[in-house]
Length: 499
Image (cartoon, rainbow, N blue to C red; front, top):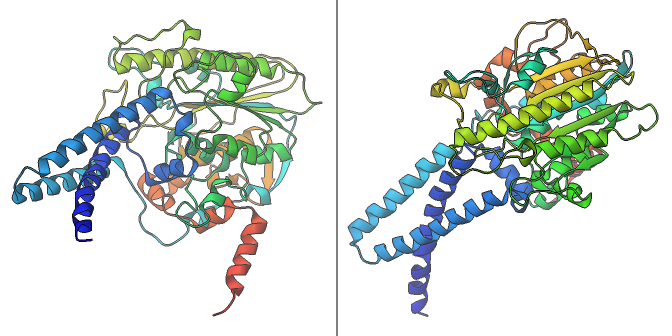
């Protein structure tokens, strides 16, 4: 028995050392390969997992960092046994300080600590609106391009812009202004969710005893663009190169009436060759497979909505795509690798958009192309830190008549907006009007409305909006479960069982 405390101390020292060194190495890994992150982003990926469906190269990099952490832990443990008590204290203080600084440099929590439910104050529930179609319902193509900043459409010093064909394509439609990325939209699933549902994505129930139940849900009581379109008769399809199992993406689509869903595993089941390395089916093959599927016979006269998410330009520096005649070259810098990845995605997405618009099948077409979130690390960028913090997303909207001719969008000035405004803007661009909250859905406003109602960013500015929307929202939590269960739970809590 007297030996127990000594044995405990013998194990406690390496465990504490490993924890501190792991904090330093883990946050360094995230800064290098993923950029700064928010607590929401960390907690959401903990809740839905999916690391086993990520790029195998990312996993191997993480394992190398883990091996380094174990080696440093062994060395630090050995050193502590050989140095004086004074030096031991100095070493512990150094490790604690380094861990605190590294975590602070990696994780940014902008929540201002207000108790008010900012989402509840402004939220317009799409399920409570009455929609009316004006004219023939168009087919819709939405393309989310991984980490596509607006700066990729601009020259860098004396070098031309990384994007060419999408910049040319944008001349057929409109750029609506400066599109900023808020905290709950700053990673792929967050960007998709915020655009389609009009609210920032928050983790729900992770620390509660109902965590497993929450992780099987995905905004079950909320309504998104896909729900609105399904109710209005659209047939919905999602085409992704990565696994649908990563970070709950497939669950989100299934919960919100996207009946046809394709990811890495579905392409493999169809006999499509998917590379062993990378996030899945690369963009040249992905856009080709999506276009082929779009040529299937129609289900009666139903309009179609097709959503596509690319993978080539995923961090840390993009992936070479053999479909664009590219091959891996270890001699390229990270900037050159990303420029190569952008060139391929630029070409194949613009080609898909041109094909889609030019079908001339008698049904109007609407195309919306956007980056899913801003790039996490500064590539192809020569500006200041302040300019980097104010970067915006590439986006464009174009509309065509049933014969493939460009159709004018309502004129409007340059706006300052976010992912939250995409939902009502697309609904209005599709020819839908609604009551009682016209031009407003979720937390967003339609950028096509003639009255030009101000966006949250125009009303409050970026910092204030981001701070308020980063705080937990009771309404968001209630919308995460279906409405019947939410009401039942509230009634049970209010009645209780007594003491």
